[in-house]
Image (cartoon, rainbow, N blue to C red):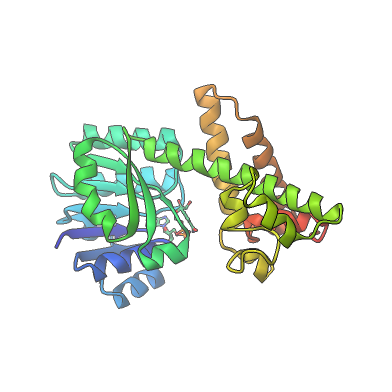
Length: 297
Ligand code: NAD
């Protein structure tokens, strides 16, 4: 049993916190939203009214927050985690944030005498609820070793990606590839259909040929071939356009800093930004298919 503080009980954090409680850990839960704290309480956590109350005697602090600015202020702002946590506590941020922000947070933590790891996840709310997330962890070996049993209670695959920030690198590079491959898959299905080849037949051929990819065989954007895909429920998410756009912004920003050319990544970012600007941020990211068929406003 470990004493854990959990900060950020939203769509993802709520299920992750519940799984830590289920695994027998003693969890104190904090969120700015009092209703989210009540849900955590009903799942077995103790409610905390402030960051200080959540973290003061915790061995591990887990956070699942919207973006880098929230992470930096929760950990290093006035009355934040670093000012209140007990000596030796491990900081474990599972939010998806910029690589630079994750590295800044890790070096601030180190300067304050704490170990910190970035541990962003792959898998949406269903995986968060089921405890089957994939974690990509960046940070020193000692942080990873300490984090592993905690992450095991919330996930199925736990990878140590290397030094601080490398968890975020793995996450954004993977999701940039996913955004690009999804758009390519949508274009291929749309082209085949326009030329008179139905989606199922194209799927049967391409899924066993060189066009095969995850976007096709696990998440087919054309309705029919993969029954569990959002395309069969009018593109309700799943993984929303706005979430993909966030990750593509992070990838494009990091690519600029690193001097890496990501031409297709930038094109994918533009395509999702356009969908978002037209009011389709809540649509599943495979909804590009619907747009190609000119079914969206
Ligand atoms: P969310 O907006 O549902 O939850 C964020 C929570 O943080 C909210 O409850 C909010 O009240 C709380 N919060 C914000 N500022 C706070 C502060 N200063 N102190 C305490 N609580 C604060 O977001 P989410 O969908 O749970 O996503 C969380 C993170 O996980 C994001 O970085 C996102 O990119 C990443 N992620 C999400 C998904 C997904 O499918 N939703 C999948 C993978 C990764």
